[in-house]
Length: 309
Image (cartoon, rainbow, N blue to C red):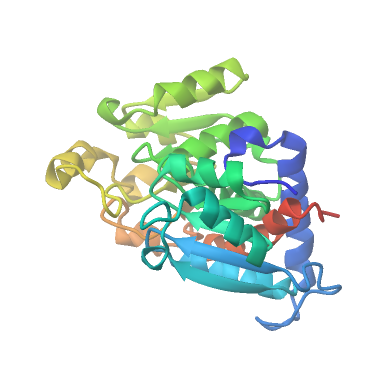
């Protein structure tokens, strides 16, 4: 079995195998309905247990459909109904129970320590559905979408992130190192990416270019990616933070500085960081991006069960 917790810990070869498998699986489903099972039902009889400590729409739906289409089933638990280290049962004991009843565990959590403890104590694969410092399933799915739309390796494209330095950006930085593409980041100096992840990227041959001027960042871009500036449960002065990002709003005027065939992606849900006209424009591929989560999640599950073809 293999865990899927942080892209820094997964080999370039395995990441590429996941992307290749997802492409094949998406093509195979062109004439199938939503709940029809993939040929061979590769995860028949497997149970994926999901737990969400934070709200979720795309991650919840995509993993539910992913395991179903692979022939397995899913069970979603509410974190407030479990002990999780409280009320007399240790997290280690919870992990043993999960390992007894399920075949894989997907956790969306507000604690890095918690997901690492589960990784240490589970006897089944654990998948990071989102944590404070990482969102590996989102980032890898974004790479899949970019290569699908552009029909070329991401290493040949200029990829730009405009917005807050968050868990998605951390994972994009990690995957940029693994798949060897340059990543351009546009954000206010106060919100530059964490030095730890930047130093890791530098030590491992990554090329991360950071600008406090969004115009310089998006110049000649093939792809622009963004996310909500104010995340749910953000414990900050929201008005003050939004003021810092006012000039980083993705407008029609800003996106004109990118290549004519530039693609816009957004992790969703959206806020004021993108102009309505851009979000709903032909350049925007956010719905294709969201749907692709299912296909990539399927290949991530197969990777965890050592069943990638």
